[in-house]
Length: 324
Image 1 (cartoon, rainbow, N blue to C red):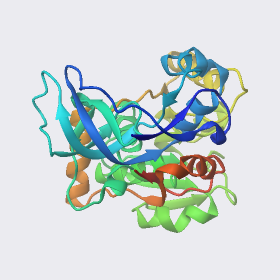
Image 2 (image 1 turned 30 degrees about the vertical axis):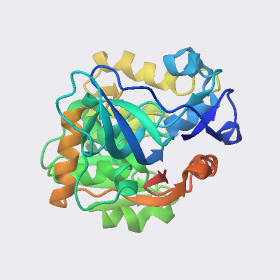
Image 3 (image 1 turned 45 degrees about the vertical axis):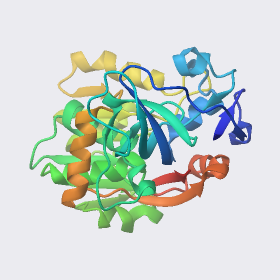
């Protein structure tokens, strides 16, 4: 099968399209998926580059020096099922996450898949799993969002942010989205009640306060983010692009976690997962018209390096997907 692989850390050019062995028979609780589409996100880039260096000590990073297929988001058709699989059968159209989605075939755990929402092609559906689940868990689980609350989404035009704006509205919140000039119209079209262009206005200057702030892949200092919160508000840090090459944004995150017990505000860091129940909920919301994936560009499998470069340069609004 064709797959995108790499065997050393580095820029997107270390990724290569090669012929590799098709996955063996799926194991217990797994399905063999014929992948039709995938997507890129900052996590894929960080694991490929091995930056920050701390990532090289993770299970993904420790194997980074060996030939490896990358990619997590997946949408496709079940080819075969392993022992103990009860949710799916061959021929089912599904979506979710797996290890090695930048390939024609991949094995995926049934607990990380759900039926594909109807009415969308595979490339659009592949935009949902990682970003959609991250936004959902940031709002519902970490943020405990409630109707009528004021929610600030920093990074509203990105993959996670575009879902967060829509989901917060679906939960009945008053939503303010923060993005650059290029993304303002798109964020407004997703239902944001207000949109702040951060090139012209500082959303954390303290003039407005919010019950819940999502800081998505941001780099603003913790004390500025707290200024945007009500005295009992909640900050959820979702990723981060600041810090140095060794630990990245972990310093800001640790300061938030250490400070949280001693102040009235809840300061949290989200580590998201992709679960069957959440994927089903997102599919239901998509089919109901409450949420839609925003796809900025779609690349063929061979152009994954170019897709990652485009993402890394900060040009994407919504998601970048890969057609396999």
